[in-house]
Length: 117
Length: 114
Image (cartoon, rainbow over all chains, first blue to last red; front, side, top):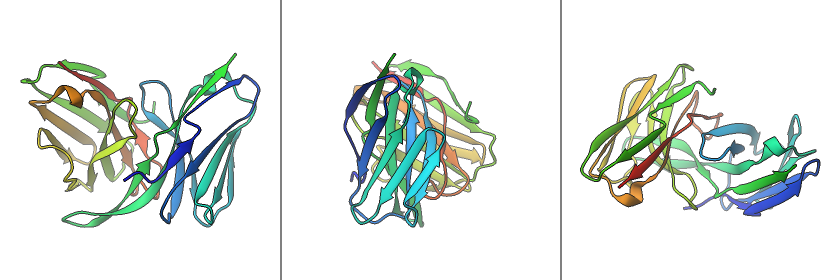
């Protein structure tokens, strides 16, 4: 079942503007991660934020987490054309198998960001 | 370059063919995964290997068969696939479980079943 869901599905902005993407999830989490994917390629990890953290920064990226609202946001400041990509949030979930329990991540459908030069 | 290498990058196969996807990581990670990414759908976890032991994922059809001969290599054996299996197949690895630590992804294999 889908845990995280990004909003909006697609976003188009001018270079230099800020881009904000949101992620909502349904059940309690320990961690939430944001990943980026350039067209048809692998995912690249951006930030991991733990449930006891409210905000985290990495360069031009700012991630917030509101566990009471079960939501997170990713802000990219001063966007560049090279930021054009899909952005995914991923939440952890405990899964059970025949052999053991294990942590897995559930990815949302993503936000497609286009930054126009 | 993420440290996770997948081959081939592109694969076209007929429904009666047998092929294998290969993934290799030299990051010293303990866990490796196969994901499937279809158009307009979220990433789907197919298989998890932790310390070379497979954690079952019962929702994956038997025409997909994983193999993890050692902690650095992961294969996905394909046979009698269907056109709807066409997708981007991504391999990933992590030091710890993916919920607790960063996952490193390969560039993916774009599979087309004809």
